Length: 171
Image 1 (cartoon, rainbow, N blue to C red):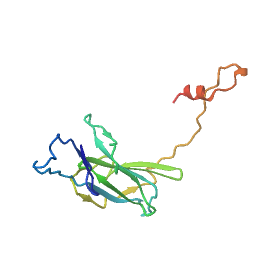
Image 2 (cartoon, rainbow, N blue to C red):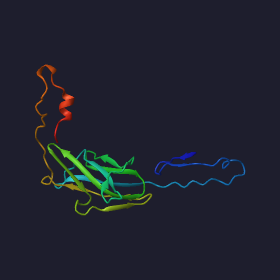
Image 3 (cartoon, rainbow, N blue to C red):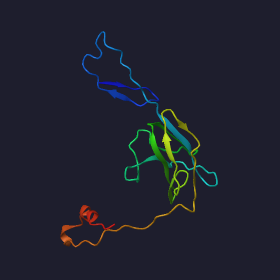
Image 4 (cartoon, rainbow, N blue to C red):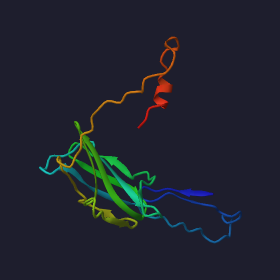
């Protein structure tokens, strides 16, 4: 086998038949596929950047549901200025998503909006810019509360068993 890697291209591995590289054999041509990228910013509607938001790609499964693909460059966190860049992406069809947690507020969104997400049909070498998310503080949610294990029905001499309590925890 031969593996070829070059920055900005998908790594390619080929099974080469015995004798294919011997003297007098035809030249071996290996075609590399360029990777794509998507970039933008995540910020509050007032223009303030959201640092540490998670931006990631989702692909449509055969069932029609969206799922997170396992891509090397398929997710990243935003920088202090809210900027992100997903890179080294193979060509394919993806939806762009974002989730954030800021203080007690959390939220998630699809690009450009949850009700009508854009399907990106990425081509090799394509660079898509300005895919900006605007998070809305009113649409964010706060989840608070306390999770407690049910009262143990064990004898007092046995002592508590945290593993057993966690296993019985109804959610």
